Length: 210
Ligand code: PRP
Image 1: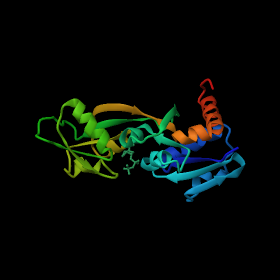
Image 2: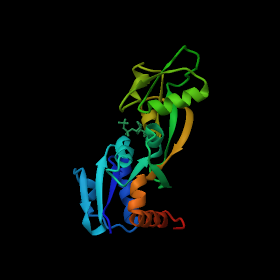
Image 3: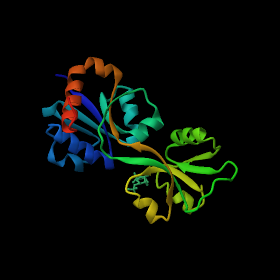
Image 4: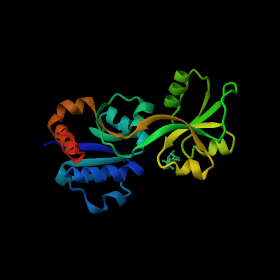
């Protein structure tokens, strides 16, 4: 049996993904979630985990450095990497939204929109027929409308608490987001047995027919 390398997103998705893998029958060490290591080998399960920034997971999988990975649909839509998206893991559910200060009205010329998702946001506003200037930020996007860097933002909304705590409101709901299981094309052929077994175990854990 080949060892599978799995790219995992560091941060909030990681814990839910580890829970799901355990439910799928993978015996992962107790202190797994608390480690600061970026590469974790689990020889008993023939698994190697690499812990990447969420936005970088599809890059590792596209280049075949990782055979499989867990990536948010938001990241897949933004990055458009050449990977197979094979399973909706239904974890880390949230949605994309346009948000801003209450009472925002469209009407300014070429308004600014701040976001961590410049491609996704550009495509959305193009489809809406609104010309905007996208300002790329790397986090704490909710600061932008408060500081008047941009009147609106495009970001993920989970509980809505961050918007609320910063006096912002959701203006337009965009797509629903969950985490997906992604696979490198060559690995899918070379390690098909191991990968299909993992997909089936995950499907059983999700209550789907394997
Ligand atoms: C994300 C997102 C929002 C927040 C939404 O940020 O960008 O800021 O979570 O969650 P909520 O609706 O439950 O409040 P994250 O914590 O990942 O950090 P970031 O600001 O660095 O992007």
